[in-house]
Length: 171
Image (cartoon, rainbow, N blue to C red; front, side, top):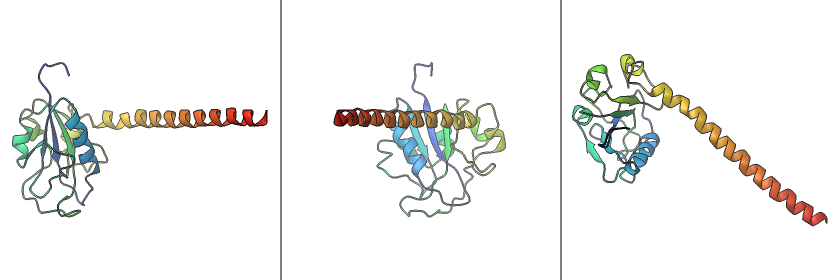
């Protein structure tokens, strides 16, 4: 980010065919609360996340209002927290489309995958120039490699300690 102002990051709820847990949305919210950004969550009535992860975050029930001038948009579905696992009815269209992106600041779009095309995101958004979805998915490979490397290093360290102790015992 090269601008002097804080980037506007919007976590937007998206429709889905089945209820999904809040884990990804909660984690993203918790992370964004620690970042130096202007963070906003937008979701329909009945879909507020757990306040343990959203303290101090502005929650807007109007997606268009939330998306206005956004620099980054993270699209994710989650089910109701207050009525856990349920999916209260939603009458307005919450799928992210190119039309909705026009009110953003040419926002980059993220989604953790898998995604339901033309349910959560339109094909044009998912495959468009503003999509970071595949780059985001590719980053998982590097993250997994780091975790495996640290696990191996930890096991090697424990093995070396064990072997040193064994040598002392045998002498």
